Image (cartoon, rainbow, N blue to C red; front, side, top):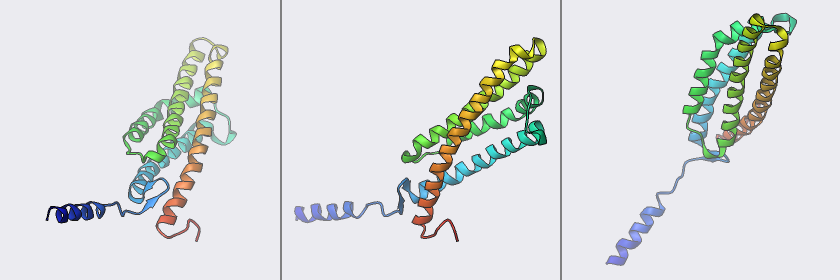
Length: 173
């Protein structure tokens, strides 16, 4: 009789497997939730970038400390809030590296904001020559952030393809 109970227990445990649909990045549900939460952050990051271009760069395609600093100062709390939001997202384990790259990119942008704000203050109090190294460093950080975001975009395309495949659809109609 004891053998029967043991066998029933094994059948019950074996039947408790995870039948949830999977992607190469994790369960469909967890990856979809992550992608949706991340998308909201990406939309806001793009909105901040667009606002910088519209308000500080304009049609000339060139920006100065004078026109960037006040815009960066105003937009900085939004960027900080996005970093906090990003840190609170539950990340599927196979997307941890990409998530870290996204976090690094936002951190680099925040550093660039601070460098330009400090650069403009330095330029006003001292000279452009004293501020210029700060501006150069800010440009490097923005370029590094953009490179990281391009890499993140490539991974997110793979994620979107995997999600579509798991749902039996394609990305193009």
